[in-house]
Structures are given as structure tokens and as C-alpha cells.
Image 1 (tube, rainbow, N blue to C red):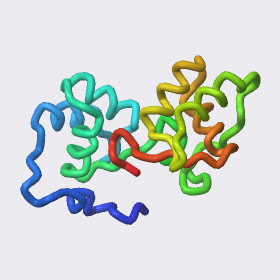
Image 2: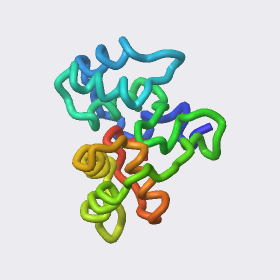
Image 3: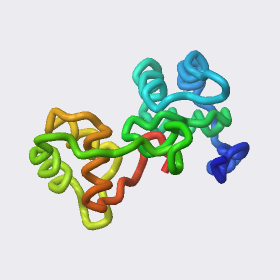
Length: 145
């Protein structure tokens, strides 16, 4: 169980207002009080809002995010729900792209997505580079971490 479960809305000021377009796009994709990271990003595109607005909307609606596209959480019963990471073959381009984008305090989710795209690799492959190189992944676009 996540530490904020049942009180995700508590992460925001009491006067925070629900974005109705975002809420509609989210509610169409929620299953069993959960939404996948992919579906949340699709909702952002549909509603014409940022992933951060969708993340706030999910918090206000008390909807839990699962299936992180980087493999960091929401992937079943593995250690903390993480996917199993393995470096892809011919990972040199990806390693270079990730290390170039990372700062001394890590790399943001968004920058990691861009590095994966630049290298032509999957998001989970990019996360595998971070796990292997001990690079912290921070600032989830949806606000989950």
C-alpha cells in the first residue's frame, strides 16, 4: 500500500480545483480505481492539458497510478512493483544519451523519455541504464514521485 493511498488529495491545498476536462478524460480510462501511466498520458493529450494537471486530477479523484512506463512501479508483486531491468544489447547510444541528459542529482522522467527516444530505445531500457549506473530518476511527469 502506498503511503498516500486514500489521501492523495491531501498533497494539494484545500482550494485546489478539479479540471473538468482532465477529470472526464481520466474517468473514461480508470479501472478499479487505478489508471496506467500510458492511459494517464493519453488522457492529458485528449484533454489538452499537461501530464502534471492529469496527475493532480488523479490525486483529487483518489485514483492510483500503476504500470509506470519506465517500469518503476505498478508492475505486480516484484520488489516494490518494479519491472525487472536488463540493459539492452548495443546500449552504448542509450547510455550516452542518458548520461548526457542527467545532472548531478539525477534525471527527470521527461528527460529520460527524451533520451530513450533519441537513442531509439524503450523507456524501460532507459530506466535500466539508470538502475545500472545508479542515476536517480526524479520528477515523475504525473507527480507520482
